[in-house]
Length: 248
Image (cartoon, rainbow, N blue to C red; front, side):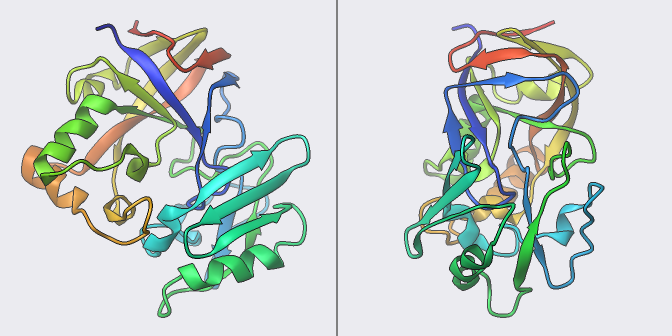
């Protein structure tokens, strides 16, 4: 089996929901459109309106596992986002407008001893990814299956909150991509670095409860806590689910 792209995901609000795409147009030097375009500030946030800041300035799944069970729909035509959660139901709002309904909706998902969410932050042209460059995350389904086997049961790839999922590779083959280019459909990506994982991945994507020690599985099985790689777009174009993936 040759390597191919199986899934494309975006996360319009950092740590608050995911949305599957069939195709997307990527631009050289830019993030995946509307991925982590907004992030949720908290009471001690030092977020700015003109620059990228680290993830500790935002509400996220590492501190609030309940956030991991949110699904998302973003309507690019209207600019409205709809979030859904098993216990919270549904909320629709304009992330660039009045977000009071969103803040009330998400409050019960935040830990009682944690920092309350206070608003949404957006920096035009900059994605609030976990890197200070416009990264797109690539993940290997074979590596995911290896982690599931180490844990002893099947877990969902959604725990990793990846953008692009690839099948047809050997487990951990993606580690060899760092410093190299990949072609996916019309696009060329330059792979920059591996992704060090956090406690967000220990939470179930349906219940929002911590139920799988992914970090211990990585450490015990492979001596690290990396999963997936970050890349930047070198040559833009359209990518679609089922596109072939080739290391250049």
